Image (tube, helix red, strand yellow):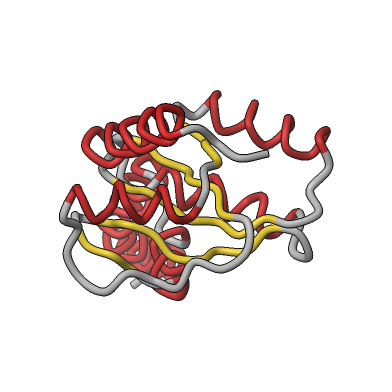
Length: 162
């Protein structure tokens, strides 16, 4: 069924609003996801304040062109979904969970990060960045590690009686 011109304009303005309000947008190719799988994914994304929307590729391109996103746009083939958030890492991280869970049905297609287009490989790399809590824990461990080693060495020397 054809979409009316008015409905197309509404979709373009909605996607344009998403582009303007979001720090990161992830394009994901999906094909063959069941309704239950999509519902599960939407619930998990919503819990992390990540939006999820599906629109026609031509309308998405029109909205992205109007937003003047820098770089070269990735090739969008197949059925495309947009995952977006004000958090720069959350959309990629959360979609990566479902890419691993449904590898035959969901694949990264690229995205917009930092106001520029990025390809699927770059989005995968962004998804691999740990969250802020994990980064803080790694930093604390890095700072604590030399002190801990020094204490172990001193303890070993004390036990030897030196």
